[in-house]
Amino acid sequence: MIDPLIKERCDRLVEVRLVERRRQLEEEIHQIDAKAAASGMYSSGNRLMQLYKLLSRELEIRTVLSWEDMVRVHRVLGSKIAETLAKDFKEQLASYVQRAYDELSKRLSQILEKAPPNVKLSLAEAFSLSIDKHNVEIDLYVDSLTIRSESLSATSPSMAPQYNFYGNVGAVQTGSSSSANVIQNLGSEDRQALISALGTVKEQLLNIQDMTERKQGELKEIVEECILQSTSQSPNNTKLFGLLNILGITVQSIASAQPAYQALKTALMPLGIMLP
Image 1 (cartoon, rainbow, N blue to C red):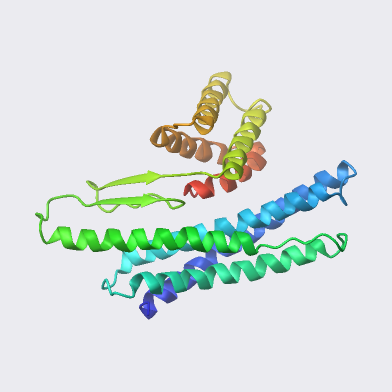
Image 2 (image 1 turned 60 degrees about the vertical axis):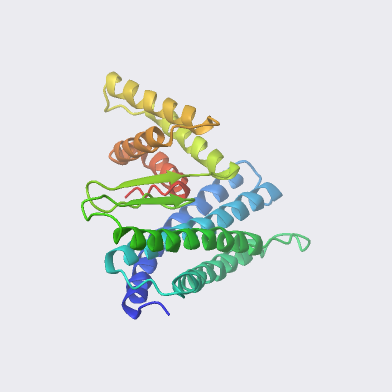
């Protein structure tokens, strides 16, 4: 069983993050509906599929965020590495994913109320995939804790620990001399969402009036390099993550580029990059 204090902190952190996610989700649903209505495609199957993919991706994002919150709390508070730690983590994360699944499934049902009777869409597959992917993440995380615990007794205190995270989580570092390796494997939809968001940023940069040509040129170069790395079969993740962080923080400060910022913010979540 997870330490009650850790569970309480996780619960609060997850719930706080959900407030922002719910607002962002409704904004994205509104954008899809508005575009569909403007083009006379509101009742089309294409609109339904866009909304279905949005909700499926939202379930994955909420799973990622919940696991990140659990890792963050556990790093801060810590606990003994019990034999049941991995099992306890999986049960706790599953409860968060189940809650997200129930909420998003209800929203999907509302969307499908006016759809043809033969349209049957479910988030069950996305739910199972999210659970399976993060069960592996949890096993690796607990393995890393065990290895570190064992190695600390065999090394000097001055040696810096190293953590390796695989999958949809952010880099975990402790101390100024520690290191972290992040290996990301984006799915085709997440990659396309990122490229699309970068394209939106590039397009809106051209319409910003209160920015010098030099600044616009610099940001354009950053966007183009991000797109290049995102479409590469062997991207330089270190370079890409650094550029994306710089781009996100810069675009956030531009009032007229907020739609582009929100699109970029959502697209970066599967990468483990959390913009404010």
